[in-house]
Image 1 (spheres, rainbow, N blue to C red):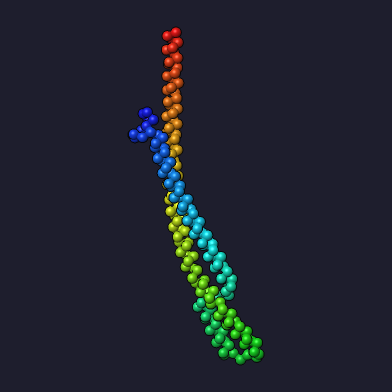
Image 2 (tube, rainbow, N blue to C red; image 1 turned 120 degrees about the horizontal axis):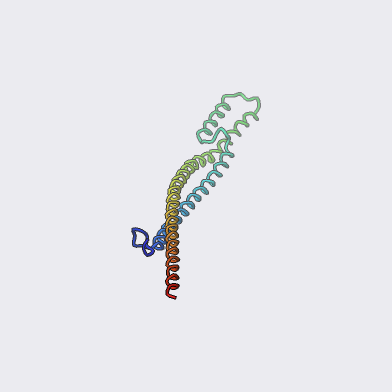
Length: 179
């Protein structure tokens, strides 16, 4: 700690701390960017989840895929063709159910497209989250380094102040002796 220099270095404490703070600011900026990216993914996920929920509400519970809907339509059509109805209303009910199922096919197709998008976004969000954890770790390490340097500098300044007060006391004694 000679002349304000960091031990084993040609740099002053202020220069070292300024350099560490600049590194810390870069890490902070990267951390904020990653947090924003994670939030953006979360917002997209929320929108897709909302759309998914609306689609699931519009579909019959047992039939959420196009294949399930088409199979249900085949079964109802088979029942319609192989059953003797007492009235036309019973047959019309089955026809109406087939038409309702047929109308729900586009929603099932859209749902099939959304599911992989949700999985991909969740994967990306998790990757960003993992990267963010690492950045936070480095962030706290850099912060600890800066605090350690500040404490060293404060200790050094206290030491200087003690030496100065001792020097002042000696100077005062010398002045008193000379008088």
